[in-house]
Amino acid sequence: MAKVYFASARARKWRYEDSMPAKLERLLKEAGLMNYFSPDEWVAVKTHFGSEGAHRVVRPLFLRKVADALKRIGAKPFVTDTVRIKGLDYLEVANQNGINHLSVGVPVLLADGLYGKDSIMVTAGEILGKIAVASVIHDVPAMVVCSHVKGHINAGYAGAIKNLAMGGVSSSHRTCGWKCGRGAMHTIGEGELVWDPKKCELCYQCKDICPLDAITFKEDELTWDGNICWRCGRCERVCQSESLKLPGDDERFMRSLAEAAKAVISTFEPDKILYINFLTEIQPECDCMPMADVPVIQDLGILVSTDPVAIEQASIDLMLQSPPLPGSMATDKKIAAGDDIFKKLHNKPYMIQVQEAERLGLGKSAYELVEI
Ligand code: SF4
Ligand code: SF4
Image (cartoon, rainbow, N blue to C red; front, side, top):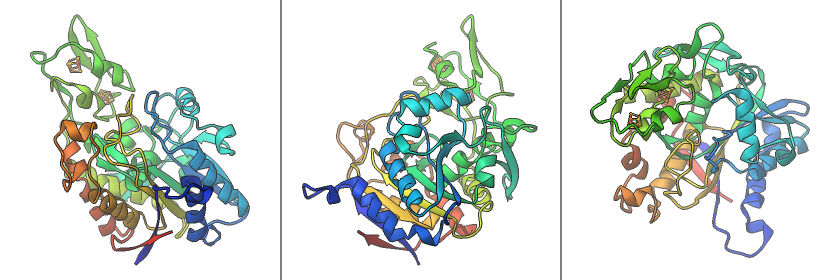
């Protein structure tokens, strides 16, 4: 049974040892980094840089603590993420969100190049076939996956598996485009965006939020470019009048997340990935949206494990025991204590990603929670 180390976000005493940074240091010590990483070994600290407006990413201070711990054992860490918008702009987003060489103490770089196309096709599974794993993540020998736990438009719940899958895969591939990258997971095919002009209020939020400029309006008519759209679903999410529909298959999507996570993990030798889930600022939306809503669950703490399935199960169990926060989207949706908050927020069968990851052999959902 995998151990999942946990440090609560509560600080009950007025001293540094009770702070979250100090607890993260202790968690990393408990996890025994020397068992996984070697002196001079390059280690990717994989996080999500966020978006312009989505500020609730894993805090740079925590990334620095991880990098410092790796440096103390002689490893050579760097902080990285895959490209979600144009690469130079994405590095600037990281910088605006406080993630830069100065703040984290190590280089900050893009895992799939400035154009988000530097990727290598890796066998994923029966749904995806092969998927384009970001070349840096493919080539680096070791990785610490730092995941901000939150909601997600398509995955419902986003933690380590989503960070591995969506975050370890490029948005596109040099030769076969979005169909081999993240977009392959989103629609598992080529779903067509359907627009209902009778419902449309011409607010243009769909156009503004599209990261690829796949939506344009001419004389109040929406035009959608299905060749460049990688089916992220953001336009559908922000449309308040429900004028947009992007067909998808939730179960296949969840299973494809697990497959893509498996493809990313397969590029590492065993025991070369450590997972850290940050159950902090648990907001309803992904950090790729152009805003961050207030948290729907109080800060719970930080989890560390070598098992991606166990850490997801432990994260979900902790959240299921937590009441919704007043004044949040949970209140808007009339979510009560004892409800499955993420299920009610997004109406997605999010547990399938965890169950499928276990079925594919990525880890075990049974775990021992070790609180420090
Ligand atoms: S799904 Fe919508 S927002 Fe996403 S790339 Fe396609 S058109 Fe743009
Ligand atoms: S977000 Fe919806 S209502 Fe607004 S312009 Fe797009 S389709 Fe129309």
